[in-house]
Length: 621
Image (cartoon, rainbow, N blue to C red; front, side, top):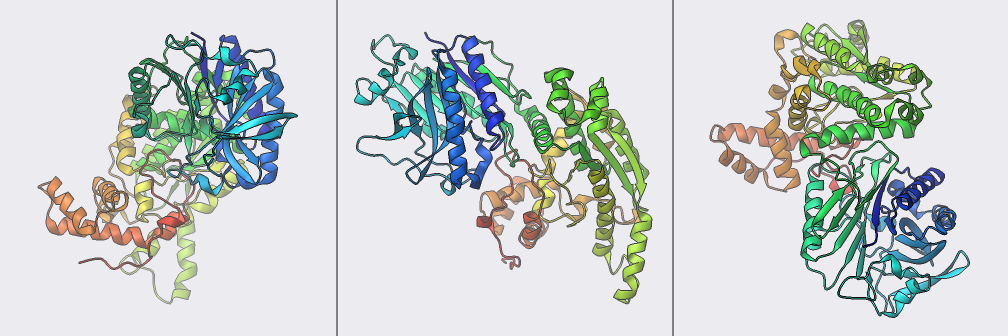
């Protein structure tokens, strides 16, 4: 049997030189492994996150220029390379893959089924439409090259001669039942895994080049589908995917897999390396289970966002509560995972624009350079949260500072009270007095981030953003919201696990995990908690699923909750449902202004214009 390989790449949109060097590195690695075929991810040459740049003629031209520089690098390698790129021809734009062998392009395969789940590819690409002869020809790099639908290679169809003319038939090993040619199916993009299980007329090798975003528990479904298909069809499946964060909300887990008649090998997921090549001769990488997928995904995204934006660290307003604690732990985990995998020398090289790191000898010292935490107290803050914040920062190795913003809050109130014409009291002005504290924290923390050339992190979660339990231009401020794509229930569960059960446990989380979540914006005598202000977080999470994801009416959602828990009262459930829907619809404007968050599961709150709701909705009776 010939040696097949798949590769994962950590690419940056429009980084033509860098992307090309990583592709060439993967090609050389595959050759060292003795491979005869290398499959690279979808849109590997340009990066998948180019979005509207795919519509630009100069981008399509640069893609061809970069491809032209790669082709001769394959001369003499006897390695067939499949590389994804955006292909512009005759006024059309295709999501395509070039098959390259010994310094020549054999053909260019164009994607037929465009994606709509995570992004609408039809905004940028044209689908390949079946033609009577399946293919067209173009003049490219001094040769007449076929392009079109090469999803199935069948012998003795005449267009297999395109392979014969380059002498690449020997790349595909002849199966026992056919001495002439192997039956190959190629797909660009993530398949529908339910349809994927349908039997195929005849297949020996199934190739999938993908740019599929990470979502919790998604990898497990993919792994099982590939394994079963290869076993049931007695074939080999090759799956390639991208790695890391390209600057969009999406994270790529770098999952590559080879399933050979039911036997599988996988690459390391969430790697901090620039590329990794997997061959069927390599040992199986220990799997990452769903319990720590979140713990791996977001730190990798933070590392890529940091280095690709060339920011010198992160700044965080650390309150001592669950959300800001989660963000601090994720940044510290970023340092520890990267330091452990890359080792110090490569770690410093990847972040060479931050010279202060060169003097660090431990990951804790590097964390102190990359994460600055500030506790901003008012008279409504307690020693409990102050100590929790301080102890957590110290246990992580982060830089920690305290400032008193009560004089600023008092000054704002004194400035506005004469204009308002009335004294400001908690009885009459509860929400404005809470909001001014949150907003008073912003100027100083932004100033610190600017001075450090660092990114300010927003500590908001998806549950609170969904219903607007945030202060605009207050706690919503920040360049990036690392936990904005995950619900509060999952965050609290992860924090408890992180305290003792992860690869890098954080004992300093104990004081955080023992508290009930509170904004601490009212006087201590009010005993403010988030769930008293809103509703129990598990109920909020479930209503988001029932009403927004599943589209149930308020009446049916209330009925579902009542049937789920006998302790619920009809009046209590009705109050929760109405409050959720009222807050969801009236706070759409807040969701649209929220900082970018990472997509970590398929229940992420939509922000697109197609998901608009009226700002004022009557509650159904």
